[in-house]
Length: 312
Figure 1 (cartoon, rainbow, N blue to C red):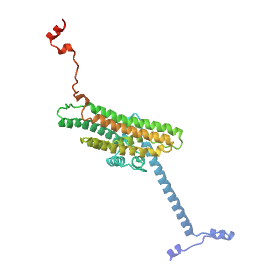
Figure 2 (cartoon, one colour):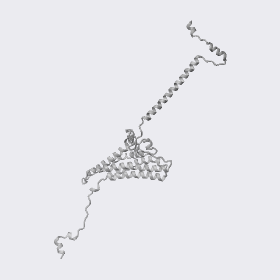
Figure 3 (cartoon, rainbow, N blue to C red):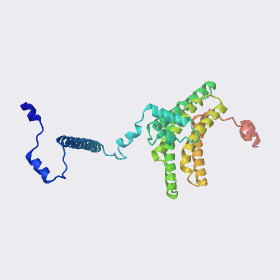
C-alpha cells in the first residue's frame, strides 16, 4: 500500500494557493511538459546534426581547394601534360569524326567537347611525314624494277622535308587562322571563336585521311592516284569547312567565302605538293638527255692533207 500511495498524484499546497489566487491561469500537465521538452530536444538535436554536415562539407571543400595545385605556367612541361591526357577510345572517336564529316555535326562540339588534345595531332603528323618519305622511296624502287635503266639511291632527306612541311602546315596555318578570327571577333560582336589549341586539333585530325591515301598512291596507275587524292582532299576539306562554318557565318558573306576558300586552297596545295614531290615516277636528274646533232666547221671535217691543199 505504501508503494501505491507513493505513486499516487499529490497536489502540493503551494500550487493550490497559486491556483486560488489566479483562477484564469493555464495549467499544463507533467506529461505535456515532458513531451514539449522531448520535442525541443529532437529539434535542437536535428538542427545541430544538419549544421554539422554543412560544416563538414565546407571543410572538405576548403581542404580540396588547399590541396589543389596552382595552374602551371605555359612554358613549363606540366602545362602541356594535360593536353596529352587522352585515352585510345577518345582518339579513335575523333579520328572517326574527321573521316565522316557531315553538315550540322560540329567536330569541336561533338568530339572535342572543350577538351582539345595534342596527342592525336602530334602522332598523326609524325605518321604522315614518315609514310610520305617511305612511300616516296618505294615508288622509285618499283619504278627501277619496271625500268632497270633508272638508278635508285635512298633519299633520306625526304623524311626531313616531309616532317618540316607537315608540322609547319599543322601549326602555322591554324595560328594564322586563329589570329584572323580573333581580329574579326573584335569587329563583329556576335562572332564566336575557337581556341588556338582547338584549331590545331581540328587541323591535326583532318590530316589523318591522307595517311591511307599515301599508301594507296603506291598503285602504279596515274589516274587512280589522282582519284584517291581528290577523295581524300574532299573529305578533309569538308571537315574543316563544316567545323569553321558556325564561326564564320556570323561575319559578312564576302569574308566568310574568302576565308573558307583560302582554307580549302591551302589544303589542296598541300595535297598537290606532296603528290608531285614525293611520287615522281622518274627523277629529273636520272633522265638521259637525247643526243643532239652539232654542226662542225669544214676544217674539222676535212683531213689534214686536204686542208693543206686548200691553203695554196
